[in-house]
Length: 473
Image 1 (cartoon, rainbow, N blue to C red):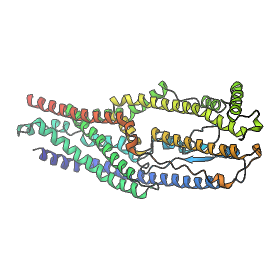
Image 2 (image 1 turned 45 degrees about the horizontal axis):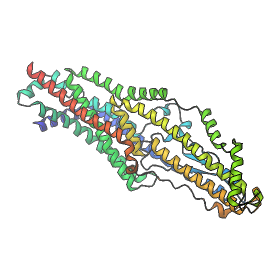
Image 3 (image 1 turned 30 degrees about the horizontal axis):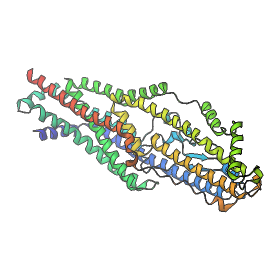
Image 4 (image 1 turned 90 degrees about the vertical axis):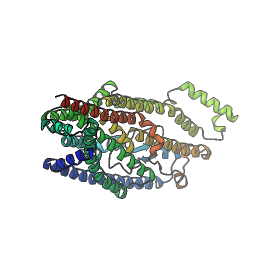
């Protein structure tokens, strides 16, 4: 009997011309979003490749100069492209594409593409993730608002019950009909999109990228199951299609639009963005910590003279100026770490505030997971920043030590050339494997699981309540 209900619902839905039109529009939007995403990523990789080649050429052809001067001349570290960023660009346009690795200073990421976009692009990006997380739930509600309310309004539910259908079979029939159409349509769209992402992406396709695509499919599928169950549950509460449609429209507005935006506003109010001028002052203070402490500078000089057993700086077997430069770098490093760890913690607190509102909508948890799986969230950006900083420190130490041990009394007049510049290679940071950072998304995954179980439970309770009500009438 459940299979008969499924066939009947699929036949009715298949005849709905409005639903077919909405699905056609959605498919067009998906195609546009995919090719827009591919174009975005191609431009990103093209620009990154050109900038990297230019940066490398300028670095290698800077001529002979003092190594510490070269450390200020410096290089860029470029963020790696995620192979599936076209599905969900996440924070990529806002987080910065490159980091300038200069001596004495840890720069934040620069070149934010959002700065070149229009005002609307700051709020809405037409991406496959946006269509799944925001548009698809509305389509599910439009498709299923009359699933049970229509049966009650047309009085066909009583006929079904009179034929011996119980609440369990009726629920399974309605749920599986909705799932078959929703997940079937989603799979039919997602698979070619995934193939395009795998074959046409300009970034390197790895085994981890394939795993991420599979996990993203499971995430989106589970998310849609939640809304199918909610649609059936809400439809079972009302006796008319109009009432069910209005209720589901309100549910979609709150869950997909109002609550996520409200959460973002609350988070930035509770944990405001750092003031750019204050941040600059703190970073500059960290950079100058050695030079602002006269007593410490004097003590360092005494310690170095004692270490090498000489009476004057001129007798040292190393260049003392280069030693001081490296020592000041190492003094600043913990302060840089403290600043950026604090900044990252503030952003994490903002995310935690928004995450608490996952109690009211699955959209927040799903969006967090989507960005994480795509490799375009704060966590992945932070991993890139840490790799760039480690590379910067390695570069500065390499240059300072060459200056320290090879100046041979020449002081700042000492110069190095191409042989030294060639020792410093490009940053080769790869997107971390999902398994290595998956624990960071455990809370969001738990919220999604809770929503999945709760939505199905709510749907079953509502359907059973509607069946009991019809039987008692």
